[in-house]
Image (cartoon, rainbow, N blue to C red; front, side, top):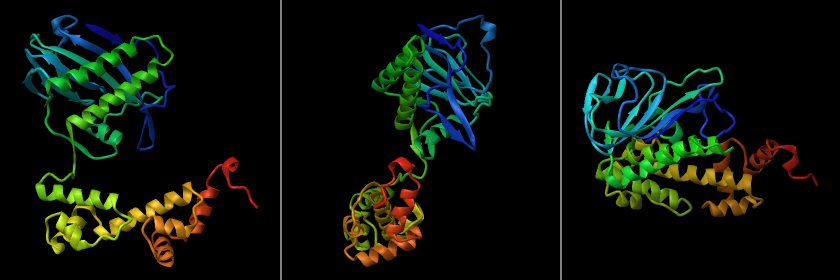
Length: 314
């Protein structure tokens, strides 16, 4: 069994994995980590359901006994992942069974010790930039995924116990990898299409994103989605808040803005690259969506750059 408990002041030097939420800047602080804990550490009377302002990620690798969460007892199974948010009542070694588990306990705090108390799924949503939910609570991993996650726990514990100047950076980076694992393997995206029809709609949306410079027709897109044109238009707008053609146009305009900022291409060449054969039409559409012509947009972005990288005046 490997064990780590933070015994030094919190290290705020690394910017990795920091979080800005509602005007406050939060830093991840890993409080302790355990790898392959097979017994309670302490008197049995100290192991009772409790709550605090910390997050827990727990992986069980051997079954036995129960764990407690939110006034319920759950039978422990190998490959079980348990996520606990601040203020949730919990206990991981209830009834002192035969289970083996690994655990990461961390908080998100400001310099003034203000703790973030969002549910852990909301925390992962902020990290992912998408609204997430849980597939199952608790989640059961396959043996291969269980081994993969345990390796990350081992790496994190090793970094936490290291005296390397980069230990804090690597610890945060590994915690981020664990977040990514959880998002990929046990979370679901709210609003993501689940039915076969909606799955076809997602495929059409992806097709628009990869072919936005082409001439796209509603009838062809509807056929890809296996829907009638009228129903396809209504469903696409209901699902994504915009019509397919307007979505295509938004992709063209965003790409044009990127090219105006990042290249020295002429406006007519940019128009052609994003799919507009008529340069004058491109100018009208761009101004309608951005509020200014392409050349003015380029100049305004240039003015927002530091003086040292502005284009020299001639």
